Image (cartoon, rainbow, N blue to C red; front, top):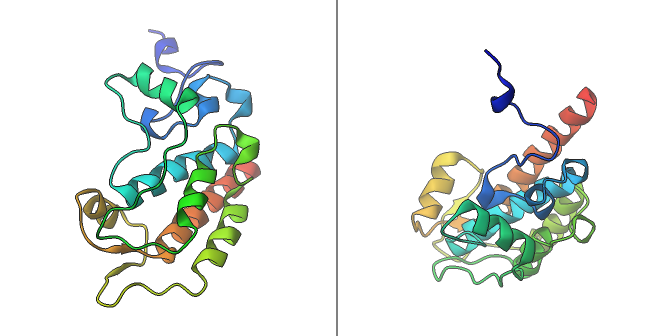
Length: 171
């Protein structure tokens, strides 16, 4: 038997539609790179901050079209959540349609994020999510009132930066 149907080929789509960058949605595999990872992180950060994905649609095709054509949504944080000033524009830059308009890689995004969060202190009584762990992220998705601290966003960026470095070693 042939495994051809199960393999990704040139021009084929790959990824989770809710987090796919516009270049992935177009099937432009030659354009996929670190900026595509930043877009996916922007989708995750948006979801954590607002409780919803940046784009929602009834079908995967319509969702892909939104990544390609819909305006970047405004970041309106959940009422129980307080983020450092400037986090909304940071997330929106991650969600820019053109790769060159995003942060070039996780290291560049991390530098900006560290500047935003340098003096940030969570509100009194707030619980700070210190690491980007799956149970904590799921709790936030379900409406937990925990604060997303700079450490959680930084942990995600460090993970992407390390993955990019490993990918570069292989190539």
